[in-house]
Picture 1: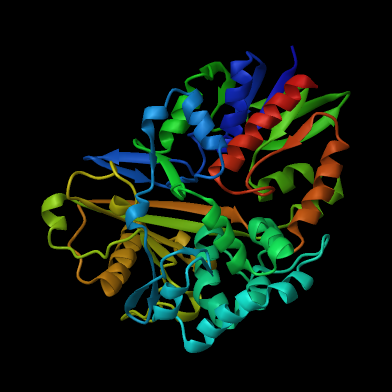
Picture 2: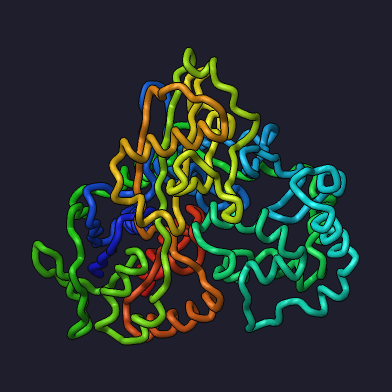
Length: 468
């Protein structure tokens, strides 16, 4: 029977292991840390369901939902509470709601844009001009084989103000990176296609919306937390296949076999699935070919999550706006009493975004730090980070009582940056990887950072290896 090694126990690696276990394959999963699941982790305390990493998946991508159903978790699946979906942007000390009917920075309705205090008259005029310039926009659309930054793409359609006010904080909340560097083809492919087909993004979305009878909720999650998805897959993986606290030090190929070296020694395999973060994968593959060193040389940002949970009695005193949370534009960072404080990137009002995540009447806030300030924050203690989050949230939301529960998670180098030209680099990377027998690369460095994409990659990699 073919011997298969999986390097890395994040959700992509676990999905590959699950798929192999279902087929009773001979495999070993190596994970450097003491737990599996990567940034997918759920803490359950005193009636609160607290996500330490992502809290949901994008509904329109089917692979996470399909897996949940396959695992018998259909009753656990819950949509986001879109009836009260509203996102705020911090301007000075005020939270200004994004206009209703927005998809990212593109409006589907005119009245909310014209009435919103978020935009100057110049920005409103830019929106009107975009819709009237469909033919010219289609003519100048991004040509096949070319790429540009998200910032450049958005500026062409809506100008500088919308780029800084909306595109920047929205994309930073997802990728933790700069819109001046991120590849529009890699992170916004649907909008690139709209431009090619319709020219105007506004007209394209308005047409699409008119053809949809009922819009699906934007996000989906599991009632008991996303850790349930990891646990459900691992229930099918016998413990004998798992090696926790086993950092892979090197991999070599000799005589049609792979040697995987850990601190416990070397072991031979016929095929290998590398599901480690990009910087780790780069280190492991560099000795095989210098091309891997070049193509996997990508920036990655770090993220810090700070959760503050308030029990119902305490929460009665709090006045949290209706909505899913707020974003902090990098061009208008929050000013605090200590000017040296790194600023929040975003905050989620968890109890409003999803049902069943807090005790009745409770409040759960998740604050996010990252970007350029993350390296300086990673070394701070949990108490310091909780104090920083509490102070900045008080600055924005008004006086907050002491939380009943706090949680801090640090995710260093967890968000790879899909820089301009990313897709072309990935095509070249796939060619080099395909030239080495029985080597497969999966993870968030390649084709998507969301849970559905990683689940799809892991399962497809396992299926492909089983057929080889």
